[in-house]
Structures are given as structure tokens and as C-alpha cells.
Image (cartoon, rainbow over all chains, first blue to last red; front, side, top):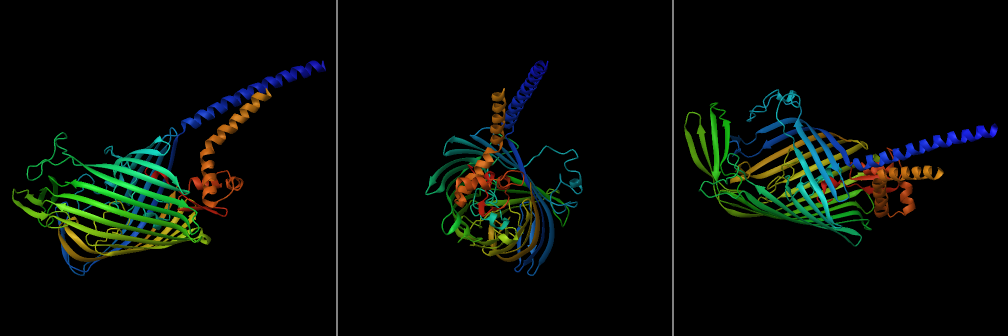
Length: 475
Length: 83
């Protein structure tokens, strides 16, 4: 009887164990498939930044904005403005196979609770709209700061296609105490470029050598007639595509005896001649008469650029927390043609066409100029790896510097003909939260009449200062 | 039966490892390359868990991250063209 009971018990136990084992097998299989399915990864960053900005105009001058209105400054004018802003980034990574990776970033950058948006042409973005955005009916716009794929064609060869990470490049990461945040050195060009790139990587002397070619087709589009080219003011067709090419050479190595991380970058960037302003038409309001004014910018002005940038980042010098960065631009910019402005009042009166000039001057000319950025920072391990640093920028009159995607409000990297200083302290609280304090000052000495880039050149003396603080959360 | 259970546990271990293998392998490789640690020392630093060193390195938002006596450079692959 006892033997029989033991036998029955053993059979029951074995059956139960078998059922459990089978269940475990199924669970393992489910986990395996779940692992294969789950190729998405999300992360992000949210920043609240407060800037107290003061601009002093030490020389009088006037400029024309692209909406057709004139700004005049008298000697000694001062403006003080406070800015509360939110920057939010949601990063997306998808890696469905070992060969293909997608990176995307949804970004929002906004002044907080802007209830009065006067002074511009905010026809579709009027006061109080902001209190309901995202909830009220609007449109389906979504902004992608970056969206690109890396596809491994071969072991060392990667094809990249899409909206590439070309802004906030080195050395911007020094003052943010982050790893490099963008693919192009800042002095090459501060704008988001869509394009196609081929990257070849090779191990060399214990480091990583990277050679990269990038193609960026710039476009000019006739929105009214999508399949027709624009004509400029002389009746000549404007090329709808202009090619921009770039070559990059990078070498990165860790653990030199004298520096923890060595990162050298050379970039060559060439713009074809691009006509961005043929038939540019804007509608605005003349503030003195409240009359609706329509301005038409037209002409055949073209901009060509050729740039060489050298950048060196040294992190952890002499086995300390000392970091150093230097970035150098040798640039050539050429403006050609002539732009005119014609104004139409709502009573039928017209003014113009008035000749404005071309890129960087009142007549066609080639401009050469250099720019430098120096960074020196120190990581203090005893203070949770806090970073304290200083940045200095100096820019020639005729160096064409452009930075359209920067958080700073002083023109830190566009202080043409002058210089800029930046002192910063980045204090991590923990792995996901850091606080930053800083002071920036930019001295700008040159500008052009239209939008700062086109028409006659003026000597100016603007000093813009900002005290700022920032709370940054990563998740 | 025992063989089946062992296989199942082994497979579970493999898959679990697979889920984190990339992150852990990346961590060990970084420690060996950047701090010249031995394989064993690098593995010893690869502590698990949500607040462990592997995840600390994987989710690093600063320029560097400190793990033990080793300072690792962080990299944001999404900010580099071509990876």
C-alpha cells in the first residue's frame, strides 16, 4: 500500500513538474519573442532655463528685418528682458536588426505661457492660443529635430539618411557638461541639415579613425506651382536644388598617457550658390499708420560658402579633471547679384523697388574670415562631478558664422567682428537632475542692413549680457 | 525531466542575459578599453540592478560617469552621424 502510494505520489509530482517545466519553456519562448519585438527605446531631457538679458547699443544704426519693418537704435539705448523658457526633447531609438538603427528626436522649445504675442505677424498664433494648444483643434504639425537611420552596408561602412544631428555640435557640449551633442562642429554651420552620409570607420593605433562624406541638397520651392521653377527678377530660372557637400575626418582615442580622451575633427563644407530670396513676399503692418503693407523682396542674389574647420577636444588632461577645447574656422563667403525691396500699401501706393545689395555687402564680393572658440573646464569629483568652465569666442568681421539652433540669447557664437565670453557651473544633483548657472557676454561689431546678413555693412557696438540659470532633468 | 528543466533554466538565463547582454558587454568593453582593467575586474564592476553600474553607464547624461575607480566617457550615438 505504501509502495503504491509512493508510486502514485511520484507520478503526480512528475506530472506537475512536467507541467511547470512546459510552462517555463513557454514563458522563456514568450520572453524571447518579447525581446525580439522590443526594439524601441525612449529617453529624454527637459530643461527650464531663465535668462536675464541686457543689450546696450553703443553706436546708432538701423536695420531692416525680413518682414519689411525697420529697427533703429540710438547710441546709449538699453534693453533689459527676462526670459523663462522650456526645452523638451524626446529621443527615440529603434534597432530592429544589427544593421539598422533609427534615431529620432521630438523637440519643443518655448517661452513659458506667452499670452501676448504682439509685434510680429502671428496671424495664426494669436494671444491666449497657447493656453489651449495640444487640446484645441489646430493642425497636424509635428516637429522633428532629427530623424535618421544608420544602415551598415559593410562592417566598417555606414549609410546615414534623414534629418541629421548637425546642430549643437562641438564645443557646445563643454558648457553643458555632456558628451558631444551634434555631428557638425559648431563653427562649420549651426543649422539642422537633411542629407545623406557615408561613414567609414577604421581602427588605427588603438583609436578610431572616421572618414565621412555628407551630401545635403538645399531646395527652393515654388509653393504656388510645385512643378515649376522660380524666376528671379531678371526672368532667369532659379535652380530648385543646390548641392552642399561636406567631408569630415575624425580621430578619437582614449588613454593617452597625457590625456584621457583625445578627439580631433576636420570638416570641409561647401555650399553651391543658393538663391533663397527670389519672390520672397511678406505681409506686415506699418506701425505708424496701421496700414497693411506688403513687401516683396526679389532679385538674383546668391550665397556661396567654403569652410574649413579644425576642432580638438581634450578631456582629462594629465589624469586630472581638466578639459580643453579649441575650434578654428577658416571661411570664405561670396555674395553676388542684387536684391530689391518693393512695398505695396493697402491704398494702392507703391514704393520702390529699392536696391539693397547682396549677401554681406552692397555689391558682389568675396569675403574671407576666421573664427576661434576656446574652452577650458574642470570636473570636480568631490562635488558629484560638477563642471566649472570658461569659454572665449573671437570672430573676424568677414567670417560668416551662423547658429540658428542655440539656446543662448546673446549670440555667443555669432558675435561678428567681436568676441564673446561664457562662464558656467554645472552641478549634478544626481544621475537625472542637474542645475546650471552661467554668465554670457557677446560684443558684436558688424552687421548688414537686411536681417544682419544682406546689404550694406554697418559698424556697430552692441554688448549683450545674460545671467542665466537652468534646471535639467534627463529620463 | 531534469534535462528539460535544466534546458528551460539555461534558455531563460540565455534570454535574460541576451536582454542585457548588449548593455553589459558595452560596459565591460568600455571599462577594459578606457580604464585598462582586466576582464575579471571589468566584470566585477558590471554590477546589476536599476542603480547598478551597467545601467548607470547606459543611461549616462553627462560627459563622464564614475564607476569605482574608473571614469568612463559617455557617448550619445544619436548625436553622431554614422554611429
